[in-house]
Image (tube, rainbow, N blue to C red; front, side, top):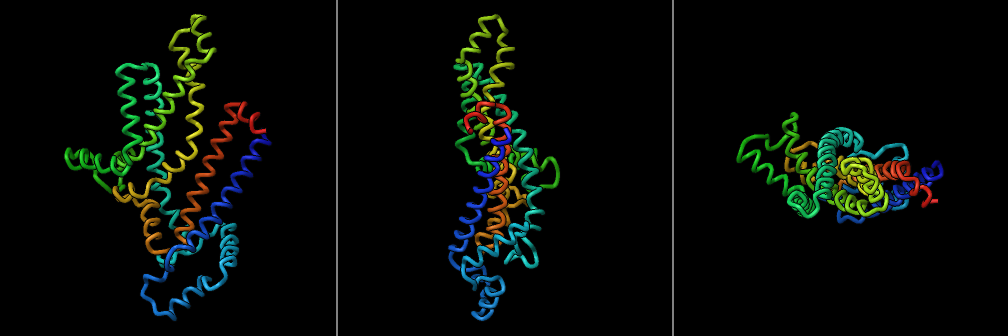
Length: 306
């Protein structure tokens, strides 16, 4: 098990390094500079570029940035005066994470239940209903779902606040909108996995021994069918916990989305790099945790990786 974990950690570290390198050079290929839209004189712009080290060779800039990154320093924003990228991420990520946790709990719990119900009622009306939800969830973007929920529950019926993030009632609509796609995906995967497990010999053996259908479902089918769901939880957790940029804008949530979108349009290299790398590290870490948990839950994974 230790060897398996070490190999996964090394792979994760290499993935993060490749990600940082690619993102660094791609950002430098963006048209213009962070000072293009500031209407500065050529002399002032040249001084600003020298101050931030843009006058140095690209490889030197990369090595300096990597040195700062190893110390946990994402640098200063080039558009938000006297504010570091670390500070902005520290202020905004809790809002995105709070929304994501609510959406994740909602999506996984309801998605698993719908998948189980759908599989147990294959070909019946309940199965059809659950499949329709799964199809709609994977087809409708979260920002469209958010706009629909705002109109119905906020404007038309006046049951919930339309925007802002000032209390529990403000989190219901954005959490539901963010959870809908994940809910549908989990439901679809769980249904397919449950139907596959149903055909296994140990399920048929258990039923032939007179084990009750309910006991077979909860003790044998669910335990084995949930494994494929675990494989998608890594990227799912990362994407949900960091929120979605458009959805945060629609509901006026003070999360990472606002700053990320503005930094891209303003060529704020430090912000684009910092937030992209933060998201990438978060995604890789979530995948690493899921890989380790998957290895713990299923010894065949560890054996296959040797």
